[in-house]
Length: 274
Ligand code: ZN
Image (cartoon, rainbow, N blue to C red; front, side, top):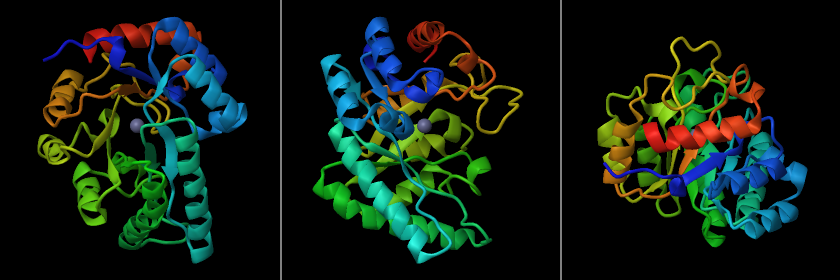
C-alpha cells in the first residue's frame, strides 16, 4: 500500500458548504490542498470566468465539476431541458479545466413507477450528451449512487450497472467510484477491477453508524465503517493513481464548524486513514 499525501487530495466543495467557492479556493491554497471539485451552484455564484482565473492563479487542479446528469423527466420536453443544461455543464467543465464532469444520472420521473424506463432514459440521455462531450474532449463520469437514492437522484446504483453503461456507450464515458455509495457492494472488488482504464475519480468520506439523515449525514474519514485503505488499494490496482476527492455532506456536524478546522481535519485524516 503506497503512502498517501495531500498531493493527491482534492476538496469537493460540498465538504465546506459554509464556504463560497472563492473561500474554498483560498482555503485550498492556505492548506496546501492542490485540487478541488466545485459544485455548479457555487461556480455560478462566483461566475465561471472569475472562478477559472482564480483557480488558475492559485495553481489548483480541478478533479471534476459536480455535477451534470438528472437526465430523467416525465416528457420529451423535460428531457430536452436536461440535455441542454448538461451541454452547458460540459462547457463549464471545459472553462475551468476540469478533468471530467460527474454525472448523477437522475431518479424515477414524477408520476412514474417504471424503473426500467428511467434507466433507459439515463442511457439515452448520456448517449446524446456524449456527442458534445466528445467534441469538447470532456470525459463523463457516471457516479453510481447508493440504492437509497434510486427514486429521487440516481437509478444507476452499482458499479456493475455503470460498467455496463460504459461498455454500451463507448469512448468518452467512465465511472466515479464514491466510497459512500458502493462500499456495501459484494461485487465491489470485481467491478472496480472491471473498471480498469475508465476510473475517472475516487471519492471518500465515511459511513456513520447510525446514519441520521439519508443525504446530509456523511462522516469524516475514519469515523465510520468503510475500509478506505482496502478500497483505495482496489482502485489503485485498477490503475487509478489520480486525485482523490473528499466529499462530505454533513449538515449537523462539519458544516457547522469553522471551515479551516474542517480542512485541517480533512488533510490529517486523508494522510492517515485513507
Ligand atoms: Zn461523489
